[in-house]
Amino acid sequence: MSTPTPTAALLAEIEEIGRDPERGGYSRPGFAAAELTLRDWFVDHARRRGLDVEIDADGVVWAWWLPADGTRHGAIGTGSHLDSVPGGGAYDGPLGVVSALRAMDLLRARIDRPARPLVLMVLPEEEGSRFGVPCLGSRLLTGELTATRARSLVARDGVPFDEALRSAGLDPEVVGARPEALAGLAAFLELHVEQGRGLADLDRPVALGRSILAHGRWRLEIRGRGDHAGSTLMEDRADPVLVAADVVRAVRAAASRVPGARGTVGRIEVVPGGTNVIASRVLLWFDLRHAEEGVVRDLVEEIIAAASSAAEAEGCGIALSEESFSPEVVFDAALRERLGTLLPQAPVLDTGAGHDAGVLAAAIPTGMLFVRNPTGTSHAPDEVTSDEDAEAGSEALAHVLEDLLAHGLRPPTPTRP
Ligand code: HGY
Ligand code: MN
Ligand code: MN
Image (cartoon, rainbow, N blue to C red; front, side):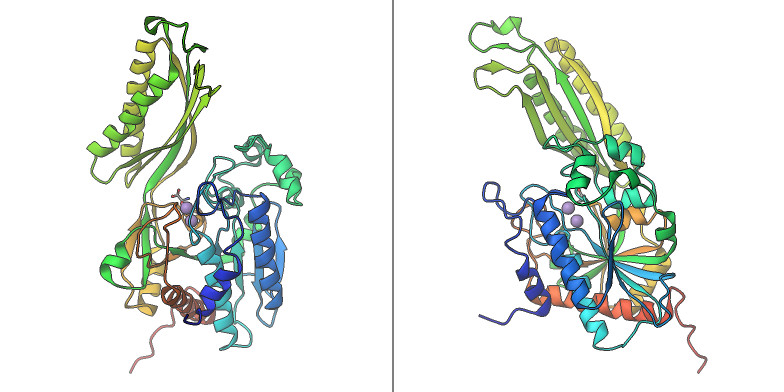
């Protein structure tokens, strides 16, 4: 048995937290027990490294490595998330958090103190699996998600947002945008396991991120007439499940017709959910993605037209609500070029997966590093990266952080020969 790399050893410390024996993989919803345990684990490691740790009103964890003058301005931020999708993989989120700790260790072996502050960050509810809004923490931080909307959210398990925050030791009364904290950040870098096979096919361990597809989530309620499975003739039914079946097919057909588009229905709730009961209501969510926002909007129109005609034919009603939308993100070109200079072997990849770095990009220069995932699979237990590649990711992150901490965002002007 080979000795795990330091990054792998850190990951091994959390591999039993939030395992989901029923779905496989991990289920670590935001602000719930498993994610709070992971957050405590991170805070303990940060404190053991002498970092100043604070958890802000939105549940964002900030672990500071300060320069001699103690300033927190002009900070380089790095980190990711610890929550997961239901039955998710071990690396989506935690790899970025663990690699930040490992990069910190590599940096402390090279420099006593940074010339400018480094802050390791853990952003809550990135998957939006509990409250329905992805990147909830970074959206609150930037003000994209208002405190009013956040506090109106009710979790999938029925727990209101305020109650979930209180159980996490936070005060929902003070949730909201934090422009002063954001202003202190000069840049943010997120390392993430690749969610695709780009690096596997290129046979490289680390890549840089270029863009994130525009993507959104919609909730469709289909109202029918609940009734008895045995006493109700077929011609007398208003069955919302039948309409849902048509909508699932419409999502697949619409997205399949547009090159590069993605359309997914991964969650359907049938109410009341009895085997011998014709449902009264169905809740169905669909996720649509494409590089162009206009294409995503057109897909929504097409899907809703199909849902309306299926509902009318079946005597059902529908109601659509948009749960979240993220425009296409192109990461800061100057920062990406800088990273490319520092990591000349790293290819540049686009991604279809959303990230906190994508949300923060609206406010500050952000960039991403991706680490090879041989299966390319994500949001499933088969998500994987090798110990060696995980360590290569941490070393790449340390390398770029060292340069950014030394020189800031303006690269040193090369001295004339
Ligand atoms: O859904 C996404 O793209 C991300 O994993 N939150
Ligand atoms: Mn994810
Ligand atoms: Mn992620």
